[in-house]
Image 1: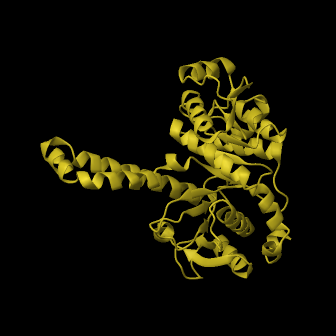
Image 2 (image 1 turned 90 degrees about the horizontal axis):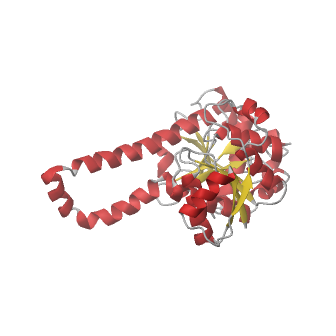
Image 3 (image 1 turned 180 degrees about the horizontal axis):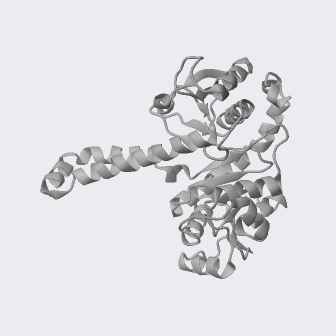
Length: 341
């Protein structure tokens, strides 16, 4: 399977991107298509000893920087790495695209080149988060749409249901609505109206979910607008890093080292815990609602995160997620959603 990779996108591009793609080629048998400035990509391939691995390089002379306005940049830089990478999917040269670069540019390129699935008003980023019970929860939208209407949240619920069912293997996903209280009367006007649509749908609606319950598995899919979702996602990442740094700082000095020796039998389980909470292990989040597979990786992605983002792209492409969404829109689940008629 070929996966197009925006080699110039991300804080550590192209070094981390190329290295992660090489790891993915070795570990998963995938064929990465690295899109960007050939001289820089090839230098990194030599550095990591890619050798005879099936890695293809496609030229894209332009790079969209993080400070640029996505729509203007896409018009001005028609041969940007993200645009050319998405074009690879459009032309059938790759099964999916992965980018750790400008999220707005990635979404814009997907909408312009691949198009939006008919019946879906806005694409959404679906972030997979851990829960205490071990079963993941899908949070969407995690940053693609700042302002949403009730029908958009209902559509997010449908797409999250399909992703949880097809990719995560959850038979009957419970769909919750992120709100400031579990009662039906809680939330703003958009949330209350969205709850009404979801309640009348054929989705397995679990009602309102409060922020404190997100990681306790009360729902398998949690929907919200992209502003709230991105804040939740970044707060979660920051909290994990802060706890880790606090724990590490407490082990400094001779007293800390002595305590570390005493806690040594617990450190191995602790590493597993950090692994479950580390965004790098999940790799990236799919952009649902477009006619193709796109994985949005964290801007700070290192080689391991890129490797896992490519794995996520393989999984979404293997399960034909866009086709499943199209099928659901025309099936029973969409029949009770007025926004999809």
